Picture (cartoon, helix red, strand yellow):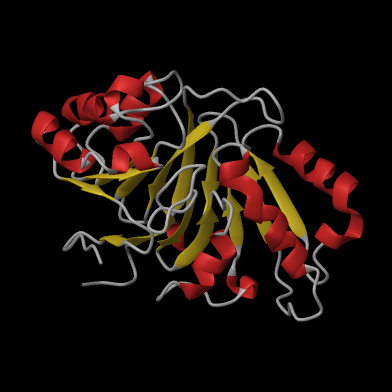
Amino acid sequence: MSFDRMIRLHVLGAGGAVPTATHGPAAYWLEIDGHGLLLDPGPGALVRLVRQRGAPDSVDAIPAVLLSHLHLDHTADLTALLFALHSVVARAADPLVIAGPPGTAAYLDRLRDLYGHWVEPRQRELRVRELAPRGALDLPGGGRVEAFGVAHAEDRFGAGCLGYVFLDAAGRRLVYSGDTGPSPDLTAAARACDLLLVECTTPDDLAVDGHLSPARVADLARNTRPGRVVLTHQFPLVVALDPARTVAARSGVPCAAARDGDVFVIDGETEMRS
């Protein structure tokens, strides 16, 4: 197994806005060809990150933050990260990249209006990138992040919500839905990907606009045939229903329901879960 060309996903938070002992709000640590980034740091993300085996044990080791949208359950610990980097204890001096949908820069301005210099890193320059659908972010080592639009409402801070395709230098693909309802752009992005990390918020009988349920995820998987589906953003009612079994049975695609601390690896030889 090569550790040079691979995607490693640490699920720090597999739940939604209502945390449980096994499913905290959204948060993920991704390593693409050895380059790490913090994806959607919801409430408690930093504590779960530094406790996660194989992930950074210090905020100094976070080179980039990527946001799918600006709702609180996906962004709360961005403020905590900036506050931590203002401390004299933080020593890293390399730039911190913060990327997200249009409105990200204005969101950071509003945090500064609220907290002032307390959310200004003491050592590190902030480099803000706003990504429109079909925008991209190149990563060191040859990896790449590509954005696509999704069907989720954002009318407070941003101009839209995004999903992402993560590619390593060998072309392997992890697709992240972000928060979304059924979406043609998600369907196009997910087709034949190696791993689909997809939200599954509610049971089918409580399905709402802007989110997916087990039946909706099964339809998506059946139509796109990813190598594997990993369910995330699971609220307590859906967790209790064993949604992975439903998705796998209806789609014929292997499916796992993520829990906090799970690790998935795509390297062309193995796909592991711990």
